Image 1 (cartoon, helix red, strand yellow):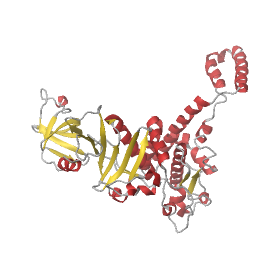
Image 2: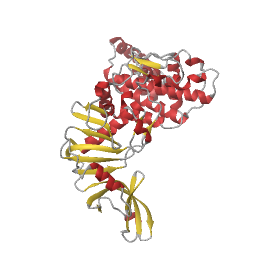
Image 3: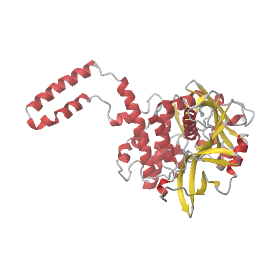
Length: 444
């Protein structure tokens, strides 16, 4: 059976097994031990759907209806599906959000990542490598599916992880990605139109949609007024190598991946102190990652070591003559040993290499709000002159989002411009501090 036919058959089911938004519902006779609903379990149970044998993988009891029970089915698969087996895998995600019909990847990615395919246009087919080992494709099928596939044999668990990272990365770059649910197919070969085994899952993040993306090749998206913004000679798109670096970095570093996922979560919320605290969390995650790198690469100079030794000797003499300090000796000596460590503020600013990202004083003020936000302190005032609290919150949120994007893109080697979100979205307010800012930020 072809993949599109399988999906049509499954999603047309009614009666005792049927689709309910992103999940499926199953009605069946009660099979409780001693009448206790807590003993109910249908995972690994086999079902016959129009002659197809499937097994339930993940479920939850929804309610009892007399002698029957209704189950939420989150994942199911064909009987022969095996997550540990190598094969040719594809992920098909139904494009049910209207935004996916007008989505243009060429606004965000440079031409070197696009490839031609017999189905779909040139502008919606990405081809790239992961770990210099696997070749992946990402494209929109004209039957309204988003498809990800791998040209090499791969285990399902690897393929699943890579797909989720790809979806997260594309959403971060473009401001939109269809998710919610999808069908995994195992094939005998790469070009096979009929599937060997399949798995359905609704265990994806919700479809992501946000206006707060910063990579954009369309010059009209850099200014909402009638002003002309000259960006024609500047790089505005992500090339293949940078995208591959982003994917590999997300796979290699769970904290980096978590930072991007937290950022996109914040971008789906209303702008508020809550969403700003999420941005502060992103800064904290990125700073800790950067700090760990500094600790493993920084070597104390000889004069620093000598100074610390001398200072510790003096401190020990003072402690020996003051019994009240004896119990604090370990803490005192430890702090002396860290006297040349980078300060918290310097750690924050180290995310932004001065050779690649030029920070102005307003940028630094907003970045330094991290601790203020993490500790739940409100309100945030004094960043902008003569502006109400709501305007200040909006400005800080957009400024931090832009700067976090700049730090992430800089870390993967991107060189070009990104949209300056506070200038873009708030220029109409005639904020004094924004007058001299450009509609874009350069990453050198």
